[in-house]
Image 1 (tube, rainbow, N blue to C red):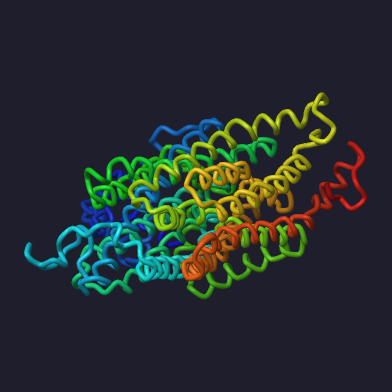
Image 2 (tube, rainbow, N blue to C red):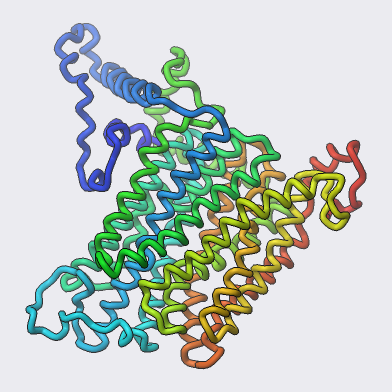
Length: 570
């Protein structure tokens, strides 16, 4: 918590950090307060330590006042719109780096395979113009099984380490978000992701000096802020804080669409630009994109209801702040452990457990199979250059957006009307969301099966479009979790959901890489094994969701409103 109150980090945020900000040192200590020290009365200067505490408090108050002076949006729907824009820019960063970094890494493995050189595409290092190992190499030569297996292994191990780091730090940062606020944790999580990207870029650029295995250390940057899991928890917490229950599922889906739109459309732009610019300008551009949400979050008010308003601190709250500043590490640790213990009772609800398990076995395998992994798979199976795989991802992104923004909202509203068909008519929003959640998994099973068996690219795209019909599944699972927890536990519940998704990341990419390598050895239709694995996991998700029931407390509240099944199921 002390890190979030550090004046240097706060100043860099106020000044509007750009892509170079993470490279600068702590330059925010000069707040214009140092000149007041000579005028301090001698009676107050004798203890020393009390004055230092007041000085730090004034510095924080000055920074907080500057932040409070920025115009902010308070309408809930406008807050959702701003968050969608910020999520779009942040996720677009990943879309630009996915194809470009894959191509750079593939080129490095390709040169090592044919020439034994460590020079990668556009990287630093020596080598003359007459050295064949530093001349352009045909990308078609890089599609051999050995090179593709090495590339898949490198990405899979990196994904595993990233997930492991995120799993360790997600819950502590979730506690910070519940106590300090969503916005500072959001900014720190993005900063940690920038650190991870900078390390990745350094390893692949200075390829002649740094071994490729150092690429696996990049996820350690996520220790700062917690990464994607904490970002997801903070966003969900903001939405739940400001929106009524009836609007949450649709709003979470819109956030999900913004993320997927950025992840799946930006590769199409990368496909257009990379043949002309090369990969490295796009990698640097991705850092600019991920920095935009750090600045944009300043225009969104802090939604944590227990956070006192800026400028209204009473003497009691100021004294409490000083006591917190002097708290020992053991006291803070004990408080965090107590909060963790308080959050464990939610796991006593079986439906919560089944929802979390469903997220663990389905969300990340589906995501990876339609994002970073799909570029390598399509390039290898259908013999097209990586630069053009972005168009395939864009087709899925367009279908995804139509399903989330048009089809699901229309069906959600129509299902609550008395004129809706009997098989579609729902008694309330909760039963509707749970039913739609289960139905969404049918295309998540059929689509990957079609993709696995497709021998041509058009057939593969058709399977991808079928899979897009299940786009709302992950959002419905996240939204359903709010049925079983109280308002004060929601961010922790979302953090726990993020942890379970990270658990899915621990095995998702290694599973896809392992099945991909096995499929290449088997040949023929066997190369589609990764997508058969995704279909199998989604089938397991359907089985788990069969045990999800409405909250017993809510059932009792609704008993007076209308009949329901005896066991509370749909």
